[in-house]
Length: 179
Figure 1 (cartoon, rainbow, N blue to C red):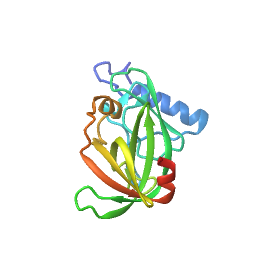
Figure 2 (cartoon, one colour; figure 1 turned 30 degrees about the horizontal axis):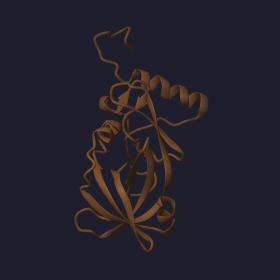
Figure 3 (cartoon, helix red, strand yellow; figure 1 turned 60 degrees about the vertical axis):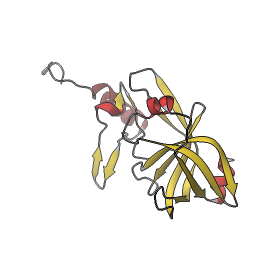
Figure 4 (cartoon, rainbow, N blue to C red; figure 1 turned 90 degrees about the horizontal axis):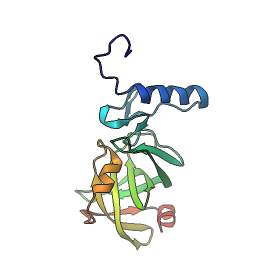
């Protein structure tokens, strides 16, 4: 602890105390960035700002995520608008793959988060730019890929308005919830 070893940087202490408190009082599980079987990885220094995370957690949440900017500028609500299994076009080979996708809003911005399956680690995060083009039960989205391992909100604020990717996402319920 800080009393016994004042020279050590306890960057995780505020986060850990708040997470333990939420678990003990409300039964909320600790948020982690990665889990592989029984191995659950705690946030790293870049992933925590005070008592909040700056990156999306490994586990999918219904409703919302509460994130902080990297420099403790308060908390920001990232609302989950829709989630479910869809068919997603790959970035390089343009083949379709099944993915668990979440559409979230961070202020006025919309993000698309992919995971191999529900409950898996975040695979990709895309900032949706412009309008969606509808093709039957598919949407073609113009997006900018963000770094899933870096704090999320500073990337969203600094992003350009130029799309670097145009990919198809197919699911009737996804198209209905997105449009």
